[in-house]
Amino acid sequence: MIEATFSPAMKAQLKRIQNLPRLYNDVVHASVKRDALGVITEFRMGIKKNSLGLDPLSMRTIDKKRAEGLKKPIYPLYGVGPDDVDSYMNMMVVKKIDNGYEVTPSEEWHHTEKIKLDHLFQIHEYGATIKLGRGRNTRYIKIPPRPALFLGYQKYMNKRKRMEPKPAVEVKRAINQYVKEGKTDLAKKIKRSNIRGRNRGLREL
Image 1 (cartoon, rainbow, N blue to C red):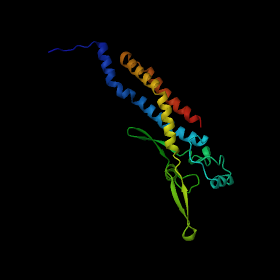
Image 2: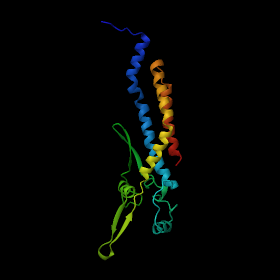
Image 3: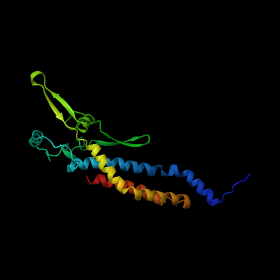
C-alpha cells in the first residue's frame, strides 16, 4: 500500500480548494445580481429612449396623452416616465430567491391607482383585448404586445455575451491566486467591479 505525504504548502492549497465554494459564493451572487439589475436598466432605458422597437401608439392614444400634458406622448409605455416611483417604467424589482435573484414586476398599485403594476405588466407585455361598456355601448380595445422586458433582457444578454470572455478569465486568475497564494484581492476586485457596474447602469437613468 502506497501512502501519499503532502507538504505543508500542498496541504494549505488543498484546504483552500475546499473553501472555494464558500469564498466565491459572494462573488457569484454579486454577478447574478448585477445581471438582474442590468436587465432592469435595459428595460427602463429602452422605454425612456424608445429604443426597443415596440409597436407605435395609435394617434388617438397619442392625442390623449398630449391632452393630459404627458412628456414624450409618442413613446409607448412611457406615461409619466421616471417621475413617479409607481410608473410603468419603474415597476421592475429584483427579488432574492433560493439560488439567486429574479426580475419581476412590482405588486404595488400603478400611480393612477386604477390597476396593480403586475397586472398592467401582463396586459402590455403579452397584449390583451379589453371590453368596455355594456349592451349597445360595448366596445373593444385591442392592445398589442409590447414586450419591453423580454426585449430588454435580449439586449442585455447580447451585451453580456460580448463582455463574457474577460470576466471568465479574471475569475480563473482569482481562483488560481487564492489556491496557490491564499490571497483574495483579485476576488474582491471582481466583486467590487460587479457592484460598480450595476450601480453605474442604474445611474444612467
